[in-house]
Image 1 (tube, helix red, strand yellow):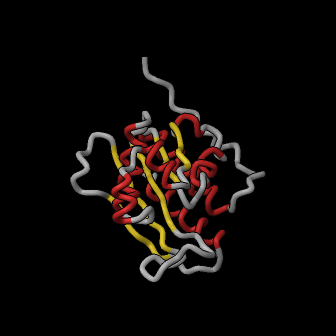
Image 2 (image 1 turned 60 degrees about the horizontal axis):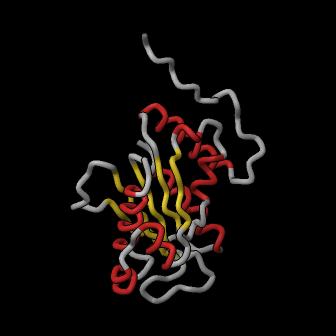
Image 3 (image 1 turned 45 degrees about the horizontal axis):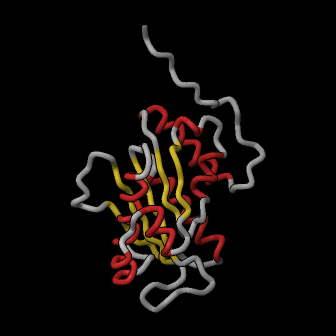
Length: 180
């Protein structure tokens, strides 16, 4: 007997979201494409504070895709919940490729997900340095079954028009990274 096609709620638009339309539209794509691919997702968020998970859960049927999200705003949370080594934070800082790669790996290990995305950054208005100014955000994606010898991570420097805009831009990048 053939399995039925998954129900995608395409006929149920999100009309009452508190999130911007561009984020909701991209979140819908993430859910639909990951349902079709049979993938589960996990998130490890710092500067976005759960916005990526919130965007995904705006979409009906998101429970078929989103396994869990970790909001690890403090360094202690990154260490306790995701297993990020203190020497990584001490040596490279929380806003570093090394840290987000460890966050993504930790989210993958502590979930049933096939893919984990991690985000950490300086949203402002303070907290920036000459090396990591406000608007600096780092991302990593880890996939179950890959050895991790070649980290998939990137650093972005967003134009700063305010804290909310940095977080919005970071959410959009993270959602893109969740597409199959």
